[in-house]
Length: 231
Image (tube, rainbow, N blue to C red; front, side, top):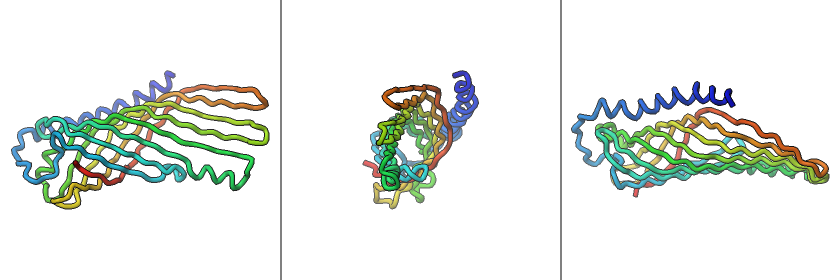
């Protein structure tokens, strides 16, 4: 557990410092900006953005990420929004194992739900309104659950691995609106994902069960690309 805490300190603390700087420095520098909003696609209080991204993770996990953000309050040169992101993945290709050897069955999936706060860089979207951009930076935090199960059907032997973690994800991104009259947009997000938690492995053989528990942690970055609509 001490090893996990040291990893958290080395990885999460500097990342969070950078995230906070990304959120606060632009506001401090541009707080006196008097650029009119005009027709710029800035996030405003009361706006609701819904979006969807998806893909294939680790070459075997098709996944979907629906998300929502609600504009809250303007703070100088930025506007805060709050919302949520869900993350669901299922290993469709795991079913191919039955085609190779009908004695085995493999299942694997994960899902998570995260609260998210974003600072939309109003000063940027207002000043370059011709590009129809809504750039932002923020932080998502929430739980994720994993399941992997492997069974050998002739002997009724199996092993399962479950993991429960908490994800901390600083991120930056931008929405790109298709036209001046359109509420539809594409978006891209760069995220740093750090997760920490615990995992349990259970093995069942000949009517007996064995369980091993341990700490779990991982870190890495990914890119989300998707489409959405501003209501």
